Image (cartoon, rainbow, N blue to C red; front, side, top):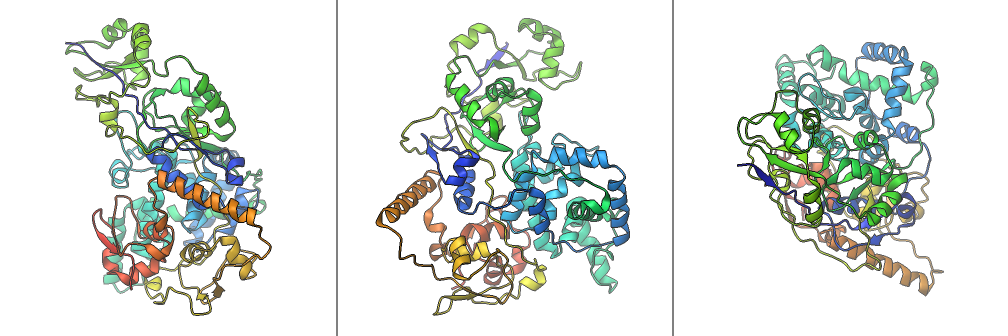
Length: 592
């Protein structure tokens, strides 16, 4: 018997609209609920809303954060000559990067990582988001399927998280942080990213058994891996001094290219592109994770829209009075050809195969396929239906939401002044200039000083791993205030530097301004509560004694979450157990 399962339409809506200008002014528009993924984006926005970076060129930002030492200098020189000899290729690659690099740079800086790492997709995929290697690695960051799943990247019939620009970036940086925590050297961490940490660990063990010093140059590795870090270093050197290599860099505006949008609904990709006034190809460049011509919504998932077109998308969606979805999932009986199925649904066989990314003759008996929905079905099916029984490819019993996600859960709500049909959040707001610190190997940072509090006079001594931002967050003082009381022009801090962490008092502040600040703080706390974030966890005065590790957590991400120094977490716990965190593992947060 032929079986249809209606496509589920999720109920969740996003919480915040913010264009680049809105973010700069700290303005937020509230709506009726919060999508789980936007909660994380909102956390980032609130965290960075007062830290917007000055400067107007991403290349300048990158240069400020270059930190990696050079290894295998002869190979670096050879790679420099290679890239310099192909200026058009290099320029095309950098042009592609403009859609993604602002977001990646923000994430790298937010974590305090060397900014060379933001350039790694140039080496991995030439910034082609749909790139796929002959061994099955995919996306900007070239994740293998197993590693992608390990770091929380879903891979289903509908969606491949390895090609999701924001999710794959999160996973790649988590992975690199873990590798650095394991090996204590960024270049060796890069080798492990390319070759696998198991291979690198065994190579290091052999090196140690022979009595040799563990350095990148001394580790025996395949030629591809041997060239891997030097390629990145060559790119770094060219961007650091393009004139030296005869390369001309166009200015790269320091502003977001895209915003993240959550509609709470499945919809055709071509309709989404039309609503935003963009071509389907442009839509796919920002949203390459969707395998089929449907944006398959779930809590935490967003589509990316050019920032310049976000208002148009919002306005057009509010006025749209036609079905957003014109596809149905059909499970054919055995021995049904693609031609028969296509004919029954007003399609050609070629259209059917193309929509399902199938080659001719590859249709299997009982395999669910996407087919065009009849006009009658479109007219009678409500777009806000809550049926979430959508089948996964290969079983024919359930479909999209069940194949791809749990059923949509009710979300908390706040009452808006003016509800909007869709809300948009900056996918990656521009943070303040990330503090530039020399990142020490794990063996060095493990010996961090024990004290994490200020003295009686409100002075704090910088320890290894500290950043100005982490210190400000630890002592609940604004970054600008911290710089003001210490007479600082930059965000750079050095180990041993003494900082005054007392908040400045402006005696000229008016009662009106204080009231405005109070309202702003109340709004921020309300938004945090809507996002499922507890304001008590933003201040280090009330962090839990223990934290249960979740999938994708790293030592660094846990430290950031609770506003503590990762060195202190290492000191409070058995450092050997922190090398490879596992979900469910308990980590002590407070050492007192």
